[in-house]
Length: 345
Ligand code: F1P
Image (tube, rainbow, N blue to C red; front, side, top):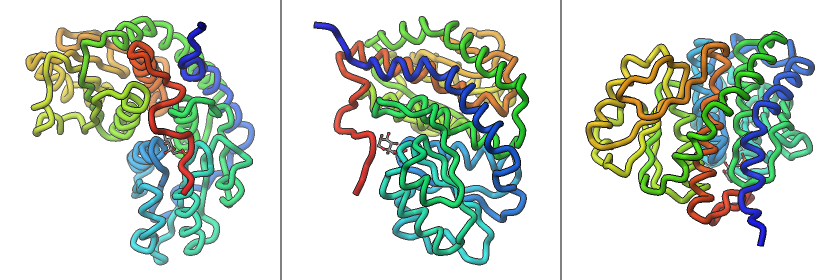
């Protein structure tokens, strides 16, 4: 009998370079000069659920770092039942609601709460342009190239990141679109076999994902992917925080996956080294050149993509690793245990 397990997930993960080009072209053709100017606001409040809450955590830190405007991420549920605590009328807030489906009850309710306070300063990011969220929001960016069949978010997530980067950068040169697509194809083909090898190594029992600054939100997202797709022990921490207790769980069956970059590498390399001494294996992802002894595996994003535009690159190979592990365990990553694509209450 043919094994149809995971066929959507694998195709959707591997399609990301092409879909990224489509989304960047959509933003360039439809949205230049139309998105809110972040400098007009006192605060940015970003919200979502599950994966899109983690996307919000990445987005809040990214926008705060890149624009200096205070930004906070909240689960949609908190804005639903206590929005008055967060949405103060005296602050000029830009509200960003993120939802792959555009149907999640908590996120619809959160936007509704906001629109009662401030009628127009809301932006929705979703993959489905006919969704209730897209229709409800004054502005809706619809990254339809991210639409997917699989329950676990993969290309939907990375495609919904581009509008956030675009909000900060405001312009997308044609050369950048070409570079993003070609660099992503090269990155995936360079390391796909290694991701498969690690995913098929069932001696690994514990996964720890580490990231600083905006990369922490992405560490949380891949932590969730590993859980959803492969039902594995999986945790996420701020990079150096890992030493302050959680590293007690590192053993010879552990893999520590660190999202790093040139700016923080000198602080983070010693963490890899310490975890190797505890028996853990280490995998570094980022724009880092050279693989020192303390890194067992390196996924080097390379130098061609500017740092600001490199954040989506951190995801596909780890999504692929989770997919391979799920398949090796006889599971179906297209249909994770206990989950549905949308939670409607
Ligand atoms: C939110 C979400 C996903 C999760 C699962 C159930 O969906 O919680 O993050 O992985 O698919 O739904 P959405 O609001 O982003 O459509």
